[in-house]
Image (tube, rainbow, N blue to C red):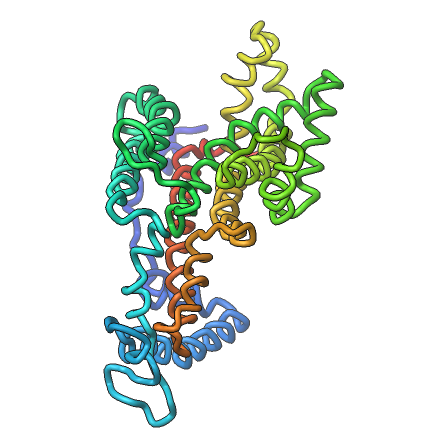
Length: 385
């Protein structure tokens, strides 16, 4: 290269140029997200039409013409806060939800003892939230308190019969209390048990592998309704005379085992996604089997299957409503049970109660979904196979 050629080498970087006016701003966002192609345009216009047609009527039913309080069904029978409608239209009967709200939360739990449920819920939130926030220290102590100490304390608080607390049988439990207990216990048991089953299914020991395969395929081959029916009705028939288990405990065991089988397949998918080099690298370091799994393989596998794990948690949370068929009343079950109350029988009562139950389920499921997305982004290392 000659000296003359060097005179054409740039010695300073060009100043950054502003983005084209059509590539930024609200109009550019509309073009990129809603009107990028003829099909996008058609779908956008169709969506706007549905919103304009549906949302005003929904808002009118849910808020404008809704009845928020009242003593009985007479306030909801074709009467709204705007008066009687000529076409028989009436808004949501939130007065029904307001009157039955405590029952939706606690079931038939003794009124004077409901402070125990509130205290248990507060303790659970105070222990769970710091565990979910990475920056909060003392994670080991926090996990010990949540997974070891809290279940014992919660049992004595909710059931009672000790330390001067009145005994409250599980037959009096109901509403959101049953939904939360079933889902929390199911989640807490299904994840570690699912990991053990997934490792057992990939084991090189034939006996352990066969046991895990039989359990997983047997449980996954039947619906949860069958598992709950067997746990509640058929299991006592195989027990020795005079020996029985609480019906709620049987439902807890059935839900946890059912969720564990599905969790095992989710975790197994993550284990199979780990490159073979990771296993070979761990073996070359002289790590034992459990050191290799706990320190190298499982952290990577669980990170890969976070969406599947949370999807199983969400399904489990919603499937708790199936305990209604064995005579237990979770949130949805106790809402449906109150439809038979003659004092609140009106055309708007069922829809109002079901929408309230659906909103509660949605809040919990949406919260789990958003937290899983946040964890995915936080743990993303940019690795792609």
